[in-house]
Length: 102
Image (cartoon, rainbow, N blue to C red; front, side):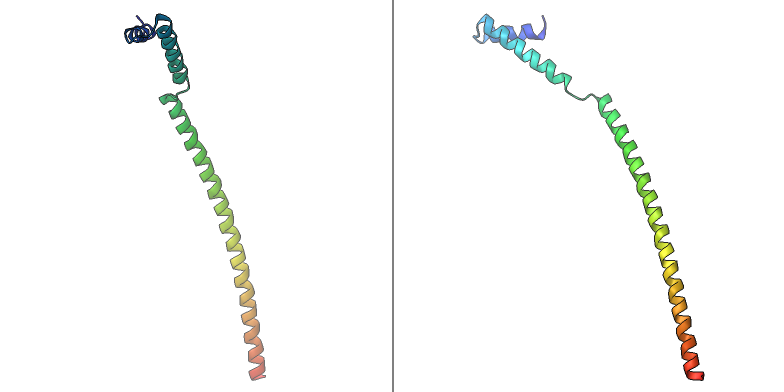
């Protein structure tokens, strides 16, 4: 005897007619089997986990590349600013020396 027949038998014992009990048992069985088909298995979840980890690693590598590019750009601008400041200071010192010693 399968699960549907057992449910129908319980319904009949509870006072349902044969037709009601069998229809309800079939409906419950169908809902249960359809509902189970939509559930994720452990294998499904493992596949999603592996895909997510791969996506996160790829995003992390892209972010690290962007950070490296940003660091290089900042270093370039900083060195340029230091160079300009150096020229301004040397020019100011020369101008001051000329004005005082002149």
